[in-house]
Image 1 (tube, rainbow, N blue to C red):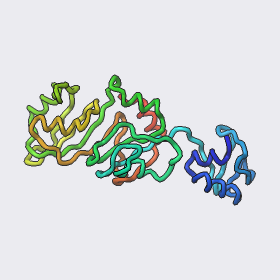
Image 2: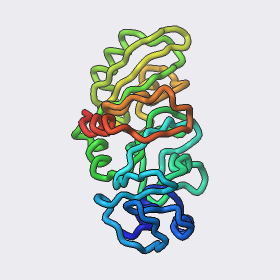
Image 3: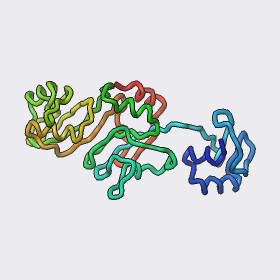
Length: 235
């Protein structure tokens, strides 16, 4: 692999920027300063340093984003800001979100370039669970729990069984909802079917991954090695 491509793949900079870094002598390969940007390296064998820091080549990137409201879960849009607009690194990689969150919803979104894993986790046959914190207008009761469990009908199509857990039932009720599908506006429509209006919606888990409480809205971080394995084992 060309040295400049290697650096771009790691998000060190644009093509122009990494060429400049190399020519300035900021890059070493196996302790030797290399100033030739088309120098060929073995990405899984050679040791590459940038500013004296050892780099680790990663072909696949896995990010956890705390999506804010007002941003759409898409790779590009001519009108609204997308979740990829919040990612300042890895612009050269074909990143995409694993599933979607409504524009006005918040919370956990996995963003990656692992198309095979994304297809698996989004496939209906794998029934990957997603848990949400929800605030609704109206009192949530045991009848609602039973209806969610039995399967709500949306446009004459029955949803799979969903788990509704009441945290607080009042004029404004707080609860958790766990589903293993991803129909359009599904949770909002499920509550509408039992005469409740969703006021706030936040995803807190996706498969085996839980949103990091330290991530502020709009912030993201790489998944740890352990989290990546948990994600791949999600059901």
